[in-house]
Image (tube, rainbow, N blue to C red):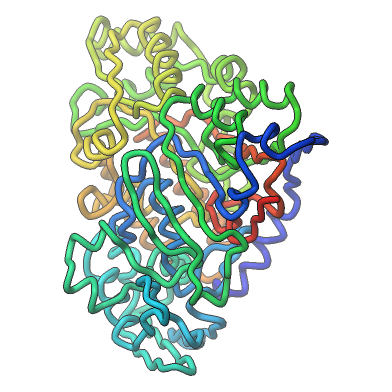
Length: 519
């Protein structure tokens, strides 16, 4: 079965998941008294962020915030839709036959450089974009199945033909990070393109500083024209300040950026739209396998046994999570339900730590400097110390933290896989060829059996066989513990009563912002 044909199966699985949406009636007399804003602000949507993206250059955007915002500025050939289905963007439709994909390209695409007429997209722009993502960067290995491609494009549209070396079950998914780039401008600016990125997406980049990222509606975009004129992402690093700004009307929307205690407080107060639903994100403890401390599996088992996940979920996360076993969350049809949740066993942890000569050993646990990450890190550190380790907690601004992860400058770290849909993520996360800077195997895990399995998984056409195949992969990683699964996060978004038409995407992105209005 082709990937296109298996999308409805994925969809049916996900339609059985009903989002929990808590809506509280809110009657407001006087716009200013309710929000602290005037009616002049109806054209701007203010969205809260806990940290600034590392970059808005789609060639290098790897953190959640960066990828979500670049999805608004740039178009992909195809992208992941709000219900986790592959939908067209620069392409309107496609066919597959005998190792050849043929995409019908949307007419009239233009880069928004701020000029009245924009810059028309050319054949060369498509060619440059595909070549760029195929030959360099973190996404190159995902596109290795492509043998060649051919593009024809003009004012009335065109076609893109991609010939594969061999069947790839993930080709459409692998194309979603490939953004349409303005060839001439990127060549002229080089790395400086990141300072003023130009795309064909529903929004255009305006400016960025330490406190804000400003976008405006792209007047040349016809496939997803926004209803608001501008979106301003406000970087508010402190949780309580972000909460207060939402309460005072200085923020209109906060998506997955508030601690659970504040969600509970908002629900008690009433007056806001609160959306809660099972998500695709998995929080985990990353282990550096190049460091001798935890190279033995028994040492990693000690870490897992020492962590009381249920206690953290109940008291720190207010029940807005569940214990994790796999990168693939329970709403993913590839998730292996037979994997049992890790059991907290302090005595076992103590025995394993002593048996591996780690009692009293100082280890460093790194986190980002977001309040929630730091608070969770403190609890994790205390639990590990109760088992016999001496834990030094270090927290860093996001860019520094992310750089350390990529350069292997850590022993233990808390991280999160966000928006994972295709099981091919196991190749990205664990294949021995995916160690940074080439890929995202940041723990430097190496297992020839896993390498062989994840390579083979991309070539399986039958969905049932592919599900069974990746259960084998999940089982090996579950047993081997190259990372320690912690919990699956619930997605929670809070919108002010002035926001209309907001429906959060299951994949956690910001595409729903094109449909939002403020009243």
